[in-house]
Image 1 (cartoon, rainbow, N blue to C red):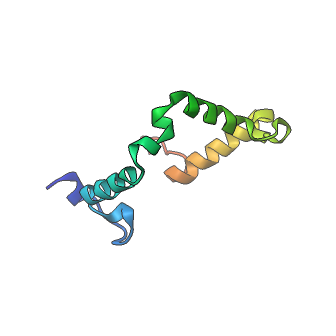
Image 2 (spheres, helix red, strand yellow):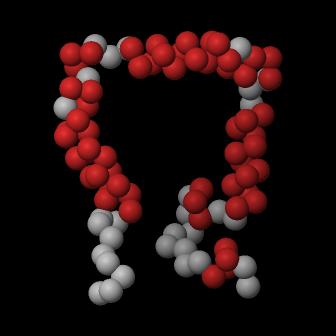
Length: 94
């Protein structure tokens, strides 16, 4: 039995519950939907780098709460980690 067959599925609906091959086929279609010549970032890495810099500058520095308050940023990161991973890990000795 493969690892896919032994995992317990909680739902029979949605992308995550699909067979991995079917997921890959759907994802491939998304990548193929834009002609290669219109994929500007793949054609011009400098344009991609510029867009990344622009994204970082689009917010007023006075409104970047995480850059001004590192404690707030670390608390938010911790909360996100707990939310996505089910909370803090318990020691193995319990």
